[in-house]
Image (tube, rainbow, N blue to C red):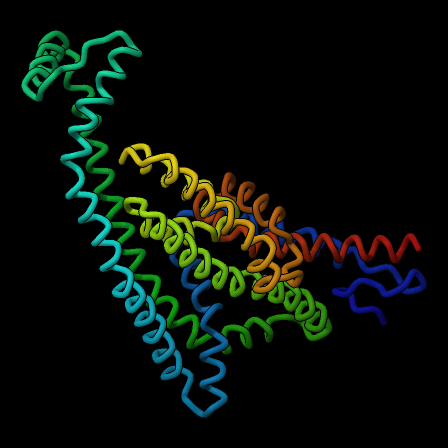
Length: 365
């Protein structure tokens, strides 16, 4: 008898039940609706699930070696936090050194702006900019006096913006503290969670459900763990390249570009824009601009032809264009949490679509 949760293997096999067809359509749509309804509270939960998913193989291995799962979870989590802190400590001196050199150079840059940039703006726009701070304050005072009835509106808006920013900071800090706590409990209780969900599935549907989510797991593991290695490599290459060409704040810009590379093309776009802007602000020569373009172009070629094929390869199934489309679509629908859930939801939609197409091909054969 054909499993209702599994598509038929040939046209001679009986057609799957209506329940099977509806399940493969309703499951991804239901997950999308649930994510939309819960989008305001999902960010720390999804971040913790991703961390637990990435660290789970290490905890499983320690458990196979005889270590209690709770202790193994605590050990792996402490090692992960220690590793992140170690990298931060190793990188922080270089970043602080970059900022210190930039601050030391700042008076000279401001003098060049006053001597070269401001006259150029005046000539281009045909206006007279104030020559000193006193003149600027006087002009501002005149405008405030001339528009005193309307002055409270912008001030109130600024005050409201400040209070909203403070509230957002407190919320972000709470989320940051909540993520490792949730990660610990997800890691420790993961086998019990899976076993509990499995018990709730009727026995005749279990093989099909396990096969379905096994495919989803294959896509996620290939992408998340492979992409993590790609991000680390790109951050190191961008920071090293921008540092070698002598760009001010090149190391932090390179690290930021590498981290943002988790979103396809975002790291490249943001990184090269910031690097070129910094070169303009610091009045760098033409060779610096050529060096910036060479660094980003070279790293992009290396990523496209070496890093991504070797570290992620064809196991992904979604494809980088598919990942980008998933991020755009789910990000527009769900906001920031949609960016986090883009790959998992994209994997679920892909598996459902592939199985429906396989069933249709088998029926038409």
